[in-house]
Every structure is written in C-alpha cells, then in structure tokens.
Length: 625
Image 1 (cartoon, rainbow, N blue to C red):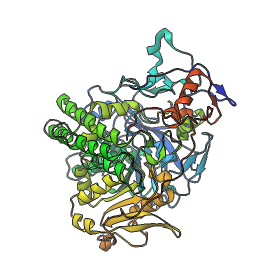
Image 2 (tube, rainbow, N blue to C red):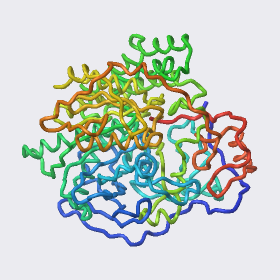
Image 3 (cartoon, rainbow, N blue to C red):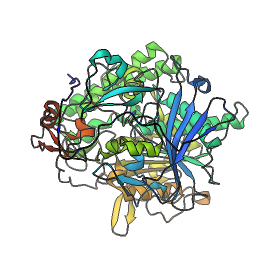
C-alpha cells in the first residue's frame, strides 16, 4: 500500500537556508501581443544564467481557451506555457532550431537544459552552474518547452499552495503533495524545512493534456505563436527538429507528425497558419509504442549484456504469461484499447468513457508486466545501480526553486519538476501509453523524409534498448528492407573511445549506447552529443565523416546483424546521497524517518548528512516513464 503524506516539525541544519515561498513579482519582462491570434501574448526576458556565452531568453506564451478550442477540453482552461530558448554557440543566425520535450509524463523540460545535453549542469550546492562542453546548442538553437501545462513552470492558473517534500505517493490519485492554502482552512500547518508554501498551478486533472495527441495539438498552437512572433528567433534557417527523452518519445513523435500534417493542411489551403518544416526527430531511451516494446521488459531483465539476472526463470515465465494471456493479458488489452479508440475516439482526446475504461484496463495489465520485470532492488532507470540511487543528480529541483533563479527566469510560480496531475491524467484516466500508436507516426515521418534517430542506453530497464531496436526493425517504410539488412558499426565518440553501436540506412538510425541508463545524455554526454550533431547535419552516426543526404541518402552501415555479442561490465555502486528535493528516489527509509521526526541533519546543498543511509532500505514509490 502506498505510504501517505507526512509533515515534519523541525529539522537540524548545518548552516541555514530559506524555505521556498511565494515568488516575488517578476521584473524586466517584455510583453507583446501576437497580432494574428487575439488574446495570445508572449512575455519574455533575456537570461544570464546557465550559458552566458550566448543570447538566451525565457518566458511564456499565454494562450486563452478561445485559441485552443480544437483540443476540446471538458472543462475549458487557459494555458501559460513556459519556454527557455538558447541560441547556438556557433553561427546562431544560420543554425536550425530544436524543440526539446521531456518525459514523465509531466517532467519539466528544464531537466534537459541542465542535465540531458543542455548548456550547463547544476553544481552540488544547487545554487550555481558549470558549463557543459558537449551541449546540444553548440551548433543548434534549442527551445526547451515545459509541456503539458502543469509541468515545470507552465500553469493554467496561479494558486497559493503548500508543498510537502516528504510526499511519496498516496492511495488517493488526486493527492499530489500540493494543496491550496485555501483548502486547509483554519488547519493550515506552519511552513518548515520539509513543508513549504509557494505558488503552483491548480491540481485539476481536467486542466492539462490527458493524452499525447492533446499535448501535440496544444504544442502546435504554441509553435504558431512563438515561431510567428517571437522577435529574438532570428535564424534564417526556419527548419525545426524535435528531440526528447523517455515519455518524451511519444511526445516527440506525435508532435512532429502533427506539425507535419498541419503543414500539409496549410499548404493545401485547408487551414491558415505558418508552415513549420520538420527535418529531424531524435529520442533517447524513448517510449514510442507499447504494442512493440512491452514484450521486451522481461527479456532484458532475464538476459542482458551485463550478465545480470534481475529476475529468475520462474518469474520470467510468469511475466511472459501475463503479457500474452488471452483476453486479459497486456497484449490483448492493448489491442482492445486501440480498436475501441479507432472506432469511438479517433482523435485520441480521451473523451469516450468506454474507451477510457478499456485503456485503463490495458494500463493495469501491462503495468503488472512492467512492475514484475523490474525486480525490487535494482534501479529500473539504471540497473547497474541499486535503490536508492543518487544519479542522475536531483540538484535541478533545488536550483529551479531558488528565488533568485525564478526571478532571473521571470517565473511567477514555484517549480514542479514532475507533475503528478499530468501523470494521473495521462496514465490514470486515459491510458495514454497503450492508446498511443506511435509506430503509425514513425512510419509517416520516415515516408515524409524526416530523419529519425533512436538512441538507447543499454542499462535502462524503464525503456529497454531491445524494445527500441524492435521498433526500428518492425517499422514499415520505403527503406525498411535495406535498414533490416544493414549491420552494426561502432560509434566513434573520440580518438580513444567507441561509445556504442549503430544500425543506419537512409533517414533511420538506431543506436545502442554503452554503459548508459535512462537519461543517456547524462551518462554518456559526448557520445550523445556526437550522435545529435551527426543526425542533425546529415553525416553518418558512426563516424560523422560520411554524407547521408542528397545523392548519399541511401547510406547504409555494414557489420553484424546483432550487437548482442558485445558484453558489458557492471559499474561500482555509488554511495547513498539523500537530497531533500528528491526524498523518494535518493533516500533510505531510515533517512525518511529522521526527516519525519525532526532529527535529520541537512547541509546547505539540501543533502541529508545524518543519518547516512547505511541501512540501504529504499523507499517504495511509483514513478512514470
């Protein structure tokens, strides 16, 4: 049973730091109306943090419901969508532009800016940054967007609320650990180190995108306003690519396909708008289409290139039966969900109760497969580590909740790193994982000539590389047979290191990245940086030396058909590093109890020093993709 929320009364501190509180009114904001769309406006300001070598801007596109009628919400709401834009370090006036979308569902894309290939990293003090020499904005303009609304700094309406840092889940799906101050009445507890006051979006499940398709349609409206009116987007290259991680795989594929189809409608005169040419999509450890990926969870858990048996043979066979059981298993439940949606909810807007119920059953059936495959000790996001795991670091949460950072970014609210409202709406009420047929969009994009780069770290159990490989091999498009016949070549990261292997033909590539977990760009920043640039600028992923466009667009890798013979060694286990901003994933039960009873000792970087976590017992909690 999920543990309910707790309130800590007092915590011993080394030094002192202020609790998060209501953000001060923002200053230095430029506001402009978007003339072609009444009621739509853009707020922005120039930023001077993270990457001070380039021009960078953060702000909001404010979109009233009158601008968003086609997303058909049951309870109409306005959207203020946050962005952070970094110009390229080299030749920004001629550089292409990438939109980055994080996973979750509900995770802030700001994690991409400071963790997954972004311009900087957050230091251990959670109050300063250091540059990333392998940032994706070296040659590309990058636009990070917090979506769906409710993630990161995006919001529907600002509400003064409380936020419980010791919240680790609840039996009540509407309980997110964030509660309006008004709802407390006369019982409002005093703020302290683990129980904070702040400003947040409403925690209303009906005020966010509950499916990937709704999110894609909303993001297209954002693009129309931003690309059409943001004055600091000054490049002469108007092409756009979409990149993302994890659940962002669904978002990237759907958004790129939706934008491309809207382009066709604009060109044909069916709708009015700005054509936004889509050239490339890239996904690291992405969820793309559960119909093709779910069966590979028990496979990697039982047999992987690290020689680690996460589950035994008996459990493996039980999970396989859970997947394939007629009528009630994961496979049949998924097919039933999609059949019903095709007939009664073809837009995938989750507006049909019977379809939603069938997709929720698919979520439950396939969730059992997922949970059983990942064991109880190893970190599902990096099975080379055990729980709790301090990597990747949780420091971005504390950083973006610093008052001075919020003022620098021009945000009127506190930071929600992973919105449980979105997770509940997308997974709990709509069954979006199993509703979304991502393969259809991947095939459409490939046929349209869009470059597709699938990239998977090979220590990830949350989105196993075997499932990503299966997607690449089962996609049907003009170059499918040639791709399947292609072999694996090593990815030359630098003169002394090969960071993975790649199969590539035409505009499709699949890369297995060695010794990387779920956030592969954090584990192997240089290798992912090389893959990103090679995909973006039309050279082979293996070396970056051979052209792959124009008359060379039939480039094909040569080598073995399988990379299974390449084995890996498990890394040493990192020590426990419990952080107040990420208690469920980084702390032990002993440390949680100390936080609850007020005996924990915390330093100024929000790290729990005493107790040290030597008990090693992880906190049970559930997370998304």
